[in-house]
Amino acid sequence: MSFISAQNLDLTFPTKDAPVHALKGVNLNIDRGDFVSFIGPSGCGKTTLLRCIAALETPTGGSLRVNGMTPDEARRSRAYGYVFQAAGLYPWRTIEKNIRLPLEIMGFEKARMQKRIDEVLELVELSGFGKKYPWQLSGGMQQRASIARALAFDADLLLMDEPFGALDEIVRDRLNEEMLRIWAETQKTIVFVTHSIPEAVYLSTKIVVMSPRPGRITDIIESPLPKERPLDIRDSPEFIEIAHRVRDGLRAGHEA
Image 1 (cartoon, rainbow, N blue to C red):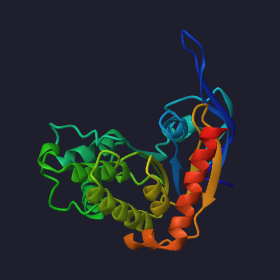
Image 2 (image 1 turned 90 degrees about the horizontal axis):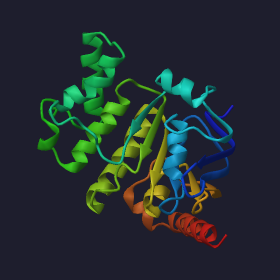
Image 3 (image 1 turned 120 degrees about the vertical axis):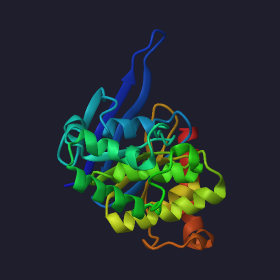
Image 4 (image 1 turned 135 degrees about the vertical axis):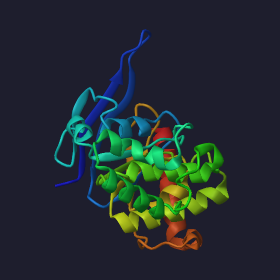
């Protein structure tokens, strides 16, 4: 059974002028342990699809299951962590206390809480920065702290909405490498939204290419690249071939 399964998924938003068809006929299966990227033009519904998985939006047609549950059941069972485009850290709380917040809400005992905070700070290479405030860290470090917070309660699923989109290319490359390391160490299922073709190809085991609104899937690409990927793999013929296929899928979506 697929870890995430969407069948004929539709989402239409009612508006005063006319209905907005955000998603139409989406069929997708994601296996446990996959790293899946959604890529497409602005307004194509990739974030909307991510939000449906997170039960932040409710589909108007079709079915969606997350680890055998409805999205709302998955949300209530805290089956996923969510990383937004902006780090969204509370400026009046230290990094450690930002990470602590979901654990406090979930009622973790103090000793277990501190152990988990120390583990995820080490995982994202922020050991020693727990007592700092968000404004004392760079943008890339803040986003790593946001990832640590999403990983703190050790859910099997990590949902990420363009987490590196606002960062410069050098920092983004570094965090892409970090993301692959974290994925390898945690074995989580990751669903990742991006506008960047190189980022999607570099990170993913599966790339989901989406069309302009109404959001449809124009291609699903199973990556043949090895799981261990140095940055210079982006110069390889295999990488370039996948990138061309993604670009072709995006172009086909515009022309459809």
